[in-house]
Length: 413
Image (cartoon, rainbow, N blue to C red; front, side, top):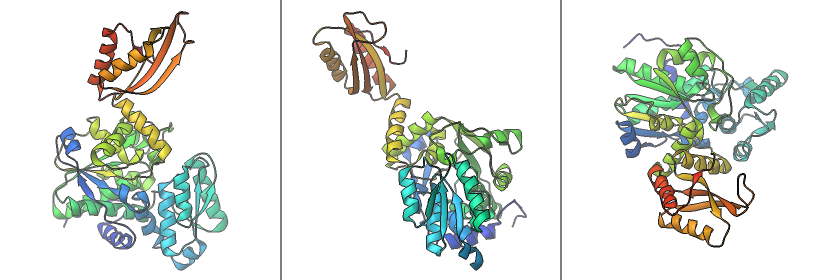
């Protein structure tokens, strides 16, 4: 047996946590993906925590933490702050253990996440317009009432609970060589990386761990580069579930010992990944849960043996899904958005529609105006959004219009 020593939970504590959380969690499916395997050049498997109870892995850490509270702490109740997944994890864990729970959520929290948290039995308090403001309110509530504050990631019990996912991965793909997963505050990756590293230290062999952050909120990428915990100023991202200003203290200590690399992806990359998962794997995954797939699609992961990508959550608001699909189609160049000037006489709109139809493309939106900038008095402008099969097909549509005497130009030019 190796004498490897890491910060945070020991392997024995991860195994004890697994026994606890098995009371309330599912062993989620491990699905192979031929499409992503072809894209990466190595076998790819998807660990479907989007199908976990509450729709994410968060129930693991929440239940492990709450189940170890003593009688006095349980009587005082618990409090947490979250925009969604941690809120639902704590709410369900508290209900299962008979503990009163108060959850602070931002005023703009998605309605499905808000309602789900209430349905699990927690009292929800809307406070602030960001998770940071909700966290401050939750900590003040804890100090005032004595309720036990349950942090989203920076606690050994939470890390141990999240690390049970790593033990499942090793059961399902014993010869895995690479694990790719999202990083927000670091609870998931620190738990999984520590657990699998300690197992491999016992059994022999190594494992590569790669973290993925949203480019607009990537404190781990910067902290790993500088070799010290460093805060950033997050900017808006569709992957709000991993948008944090700085790493957790214990989490970062574990990550810098066990994680090989941290990469970043753009919102367009993430939207395209969500679309790929919908179309190719028939899986609904939230933006934060899809960033690992985005990293593969953007060639940021070097192929090294069997690769497991953790789909960490599936809680996406339907309105957000609609916007993400549109953005994903655009990022995949399957939406063609262009303008074309036409003589102001009957039949021109019909002719343009006919050309597009003959090119086997589909018009999804049309704006017809006589008031565009630069128009002659005898001209009208069409602005069209057209669904295509990809960049080559889009160029074919544009070429057909040019051959017919029209001059289409990109809508943003």
